[in-house]
Image 1 (cartoon, rainbow, N blue to C red):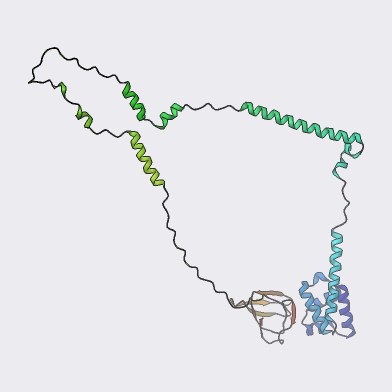
Image 2: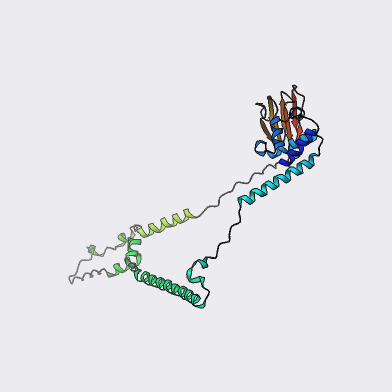
Length: 325
């Protein structure tokens, strides 16, 4: 920035102009103009603002603005290169790790063989420890005793099966048949011993617990069978109509207040807002589609729209309305 400022200052002095005259014409603060001519970047605004100021100053002095901007860019690149060189000094390459080991510094066959033997010995020790640990783990494992099958059978079904009932029925002793008496009996009064035992067999047999259990299991199995679910028919989704409007371009407006000014603005058709800018105060407005600004004094601000310096939008002391795009 120093060479650029010197060229601007030399051209101004050749034309016998003062800082105040340049400030009134370009609407740039006198302190900013002095810092530009002195090359004091720490007292200047951001690079995007500074480029706009350089272009405005060059246009007022009737100089080539593109040439001055190229010179300014070269100075910025040189400054960045100097900062990188100071920030990253060349470091010495460290030595390999094995050179720090006293045994491996010497490249003779003795040192190499000793190193190889140490590696082999270390591997053998690791394998021996692993085998010893596996041996103790195998000895510590105790096989679980097999469960008693008969106890599992009795636990699963508390009542004896039908086969067991038949075996127990067969084991019961059969009562001996009564011996016939030798005395003759009259035919009129027969003995009641000849009654058939059909009444006892005709009684309904009570249901065994095993049969009740089987019926309950069949019912539970039927309940567990999954029933087919009726899926609701999908409703047609309404097609979203694509908007025919073209995508809006983002807007960025940077306003530098040269004097105290009241700004009323609306971004993307939103809420109307108001703010007060003091001299040398800079504010940025960003919108997705449009930005509308109402200035109480159109000659008291400098406008940069999307990186392009628009200069002073209106006359000094008169209100001005601007809208982008």
